[in-house]
Length: 236
Image 1 (tube, rainbow, N blue to C red):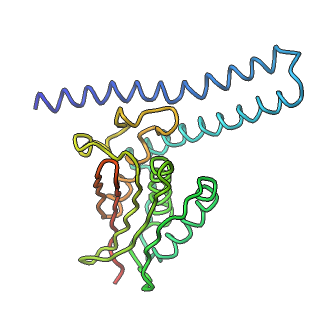
Image 2: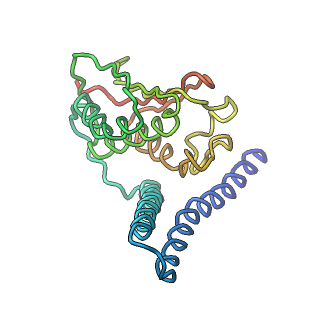
């Protein structure tokens, strides 16, 4: 009990620290560039455009972070409407991949896609499933783009349809595996300026999957392959 209490307290401190860091970083950049645009009369048009592009990019990052904080708050308060119905999961996976086409192209990645000819229908909510797929693909892209290896596979087992989304990369240390879905948890080794996320994306995935009566798992072989898998009830 004492160990659990200590862990929760450490998680709370880490959460506050991560929120402060993740919001402060883009906001500081935005304010810095705006101040330069406001005060430096010597900037030429090319420099002004560059500064505005940076401000726009950082603003998008800030908006995405705030949106994740908002979404996790709504989900934890059970203020997100889940409408369970028959869903063509095969189509949703294909559409999600198409939505990431430009990101894959930009990183010169050809994803390894294993989708059976058989069409899978599940019980689910289209908005929730879209968010789950988007978060997991974004996570795979974030940590797999350096090795240029990302894959997705669909399979069925015991009246459930499973989707495995995997990537190469440094992977997740075995001691971190039990905590990767914790609210705002990010392994210290992955918290770097180039790739780290807010730590909320995977938490949102877990909570949405569980509300859809599914299961979510993670397996990782460091420096080889990391796989996030989730299941949804097969429509019969």
